Length: 195
Image 1 (cartoon, rainbow, N blue to C red):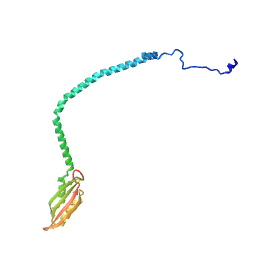
Image 2: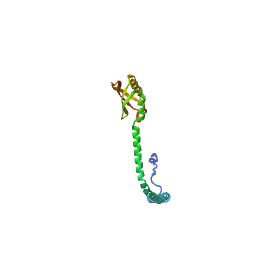
Image 3: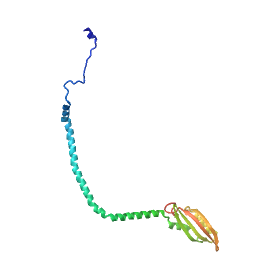
Image 4: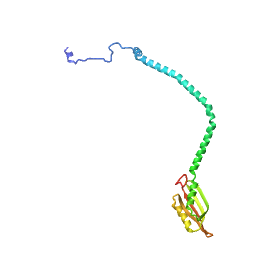
């Protein structure tokens, strides 16, 4: 006995071992079904019934919408000639707009040119050609004296709408000075200062 007293006291506990008889899994599952599971089943059934009943309403809405669309088809088809006419008109208007934006303002350009020509100079030919982004002006005429010709050239050079003013082909013809003047301008609707 003395030998047992010197040994430390050991208590063996098995915490995983149930105190009573363990319940079978199907009994536990049945209890859960009867308590919490029935609420889940009722909720699922309500959800299924709601979806099932809403299907009828959605089918009725779809059928009425389809019928309304089919009733509008003859009316829409009767408007087809008007649609073609409107599209043609829109194309014409866009073409006119593009052309008017790309064309020069020739009326104001001619007025600006005529304001720079003195009364004693007679112009026999004006050629205006439009290239991309610029207008080329060629004048052919006769001046009574050198001062009038000089005045016209200086007027073109001082105006910021006209560039590259070049006097060429100067000669005497029956007591008058014949000349050719070439200038470029950005004036117009698509670029540069508008005249």
